[in-house]
Structures are given as structure tokens and as C-alpha cells.
Length: 345
Ligand code: SAH
Image (spheres, rainbow, N blue to C red):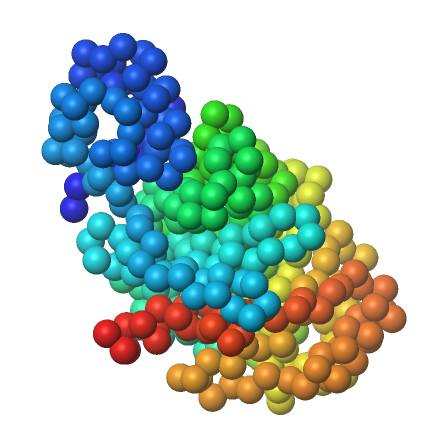
């Protein structure tokens, strides 16, 4: 596989262009073209520079392979990578803008029992430029530019465990927030982790003020082990410690994801135990009714029970919301679309 130009920040790109005997303004042109989501061949640089770049670098490392539009306006994309691998992403519209959900790995090795992304394990990590490339192509396809962005918010909640690909993800975060590029503010970015404790602590020191989200999905270690193998490595208490450290270092509150699974984690006792666990902590709980995945036997809870669960948390003084499930008619849950595409093709 060739190298990926979108992995480079502006300084790195400048040195590369200067080393090829080009004028400094060519670096700016190249950088802007790339950030507009263009392929190398479409950028107005000299033919000689194009040719020499294309010998070493992928012309377009991420391409939109297919787009699906849901009744609620949510769009789901399949992206084709240069080596033929496929990842997926979603674009959801809200009042305040459009949020894109990006993948960080091809597949995932965390093995969560409710998730479609991990069905075939992890194939490989994405590079920083491949994560960024998903956003650049969607912004362009939606008619956005660098000044008038069509992607305003980003969530790292597609396939993959971001902290299992730590260096590339941090590099991506620096690229996507950089001035002169697509320049999305860290405050408009959420990163979701299944709770890799050492990386959570390390990330607290990176000085990237995004929204840290942790997938909890259970209230005891024993129950968590039933759906999340990572619970065999890190205890809930260690995750809570890492969250406290994150808050101490960044002053930012954190969020817990809690997917409601019928007969597993969402009766009244669970709601009370969750409240007890989180009482007084600077956190918010995002509840979501499980998106049922055909290959998995876990079932979602009723809407009524979901609201009852929410009601108990609120009564106990826990800040919580029940998220709307979007795009379920087009395979909205993590990894569903890629799994379907791979089985049909
Ligand atoms: N690896 C990261 C990001 C994954 S996806 C993590 O584990 O946090 C983002 C969220 O969707 C996670 O909270 C994940 O547990 C949840 N999720 C995965 N499959 C789901 C499903 N079928 N229904 C509901 N939530 C799901």
C-alpha cells in the first residue's frame, strides 16, 4: 500500500513539497485541496509535483462507495480504502448542525456481545489520514467547504476502539482541529471508549478538550463481563478512577454510554445501582435502547421501560438523557452496514 498524504499536517506537507524543489505556496495549495476532500489529481499543482506525489502516495485514500438515506434524514456511508477494505460512517442532522460518526479501525477486537463491528475481529487500524478522509469526503459530498462546513460535529463511535489505535487517533484529532484545515473544534468532538484505563489516563494529558465518553453498559463487573470482554481486564472502579483523573486534569465532565438490553441491565435495581455508582460525579449518562443486531441474540428494551429507567436516574439526581435511535431502517448500529455489505458481496 502506498503512503497517505492526508496523514501529514501542514508543516510536514510543507517540508515534503519544499524538498521536491517547489515554492512554499504550493504547499498551501496542496493542503487546501486535500482538506477540501480532493484527490491529488484534482488539485491545481504542477504536473511534475502530481506525478512525483502519486508515485509514493495514494491519490484518494478514502472514497465513498455507497450512500444510504434513512427516512429520518440520517445518511449512512460505506467508504472504500485504498487496500480494498471497507469502513462505515453516519451523518446525522440536528438543529445545531451535522454530526458525523467515524470509524477508527477496520473491524474491532474488543468482542462486545451486542456489537456488529467486532463480529469478524479487527482487520487493521486506520491511519490518521484515513479517519480524517471519511470527514473530508462527506463534507465535500454534502456540498460543504472549509469555510462553510457541512460536517460540524464528529463522534468517534463507528467501528473500532479509538484507544486501541491510540497514536493514529490522537494524530487525527490534531489534524481535524488544526487551523487552516477543516478546523472542527475539539469541543464539538466526542470520543467513545470501552474503557481502556491506561489510555484514558494518557489522553487526559494530551490537552485535547473533547468530550470523553465511556461505554459502561453494566453496573457490576460480573454483569459487565457477560457483554464486554474488556471487563476481564479493567474493573468498573478503575474506570471510575480514570474518569476522576480525567476530570481533575481537564476540568471536563465525562459521559457514560449505557445501552439498554432487555433482561440484562435495565430493571429498577440496575437503575438504582447505576445512580449509586455515579452519584455526585461530574458526569452525564446517555441511555440508548439497544439496536438489535441480526447476528446477536440480545434484545432491546421497550420504550416504556427505557423511560422508566431514565426516570429513576433523574429522581436520584443523575444527569441523563435517552437518545433517539436514528437511522435504524438503514442499519444504523455500529458495523451493521459493513457486515451486511460483506455478506452480500
Ligand atoms: N469502541 C468504542 C466506540 C464504539 S461504538 C466504545 O466501545 O465505546 C459507540 C457506542 O455504541 C458504544 O457505547 C457501544 O458500546 C455502542 N454500541 C455498539 N453496538 C451497539 C448496539 N447494537 N446497540 C446500541 N449500542 C451499541
